Image (tube, rainbow, N blue to C red):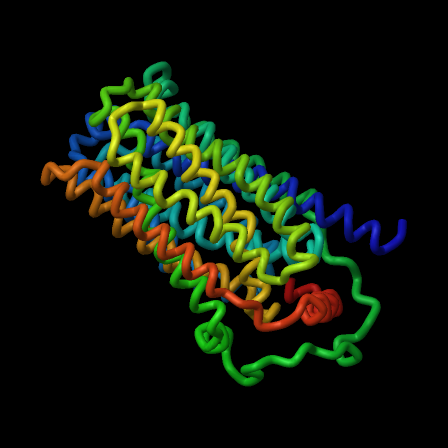
Length: 427
């Protein structure tokens, strides 16, 4: 088989194998927020402490993400991905067997560590194998696993009513261990190198002697992406985490249907938006190198007034339509976040870049999720929190309009060709 054909097959095999890992990761995340009643009753906690379960995960996830990206760029993506899945499996199993709030909090923090090390390595590995016209589609297809898991997690309320809230976590922990063994056996390895590194010209770097973090933080386009992702995380994480309770406690929807109207609707729309946006971005980027940032920017401009409407009306069908619009805009971003980062960052720092983006987004999301629960106990409605989120999404869209690539498409292609000649340990 020709080397190019082998590389293409390996590139799509990586997307398929990692899709399952992304699905498991987000199924676990979403299950907690769709079972507030049983978990709060079992652990004897209120809204503020329940919100802290999601917040501590996001804070740990965010704080570990830059470190995780840096490690993946230097140690290699494959071993980091497999190790993260094993830790995830242990954390998920422990979540299902603990009987105190403090132990549950520790289990969610452990889960944050595992997932922090997974995502930067996985997305960076995918964009190394997928360049040009398949980059957004490959990224989008992988991240569709995020939404598949989130949509399935929306059934958590109904699952808890049938089997109890602990059962799913115990079962998934076992599945994670089994799938880690599958990855060890079938995960594609880099092709043997046929060309020494010294013979390949490295693309010029604006900061050749700077470290990864210094180089990234000195890049104007990347700083706009950081600001955008901070605002996006502060807006959409509390929306995702509190939508089920919003439908249940403020609109009178049953627990089972609240999970469907909230997480399933939002994440299902994000899934569709990601597939649509990845196709549009790949085609548009051939003619406009800013397409990776412009597509999600347009999505945010549409979503902002819809998200404001969620907190302004009480008619469930209108709210549901607005949730769908907001979800699609998140899918527009997810398909393009890493491809957009590739247009403004050195190819050697991609996992680190994604780690920093995760850091600001999830840390801000954790703060706002906790604030939403705290404000609810002070009788401030979730609808008001969602209206504040709409303002943040509007400003996030403006940040995306300001992102301009720092190199041309041919420069990016040169960088990717250089990457293929680096030693396999670097991958």
